[in-house]
Length: 95
Image (cartoon, rainbow, N blue to C red; front, side, top):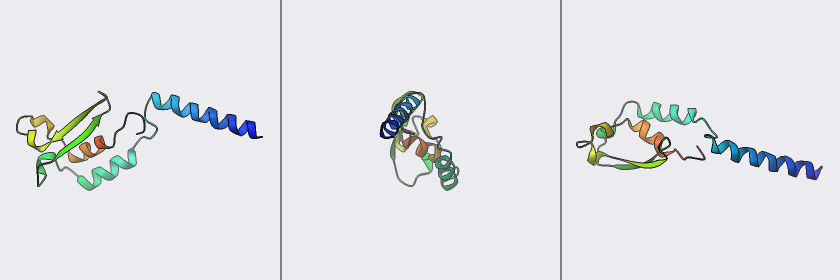
């Protein structure tokens, strides 16, 4: 009985590792809905103070920094705060 349980745990562990290499373990629907509900359509340029928010671009697998300082030079960086917040919680293996 013990060897069966140990083997099952090991196989389950290996399956999770392999699955994490091919995509996120969780879909994040609750997180996305909750953040979008709270922040609505507020954009980075609507913040009361200047901010710099580090995020992770999961498609490019590299960090991206959203800064209210750069909006005048790069207007395409004036994204919704809800999308930026979701990007701060992105991690290539865990989420």
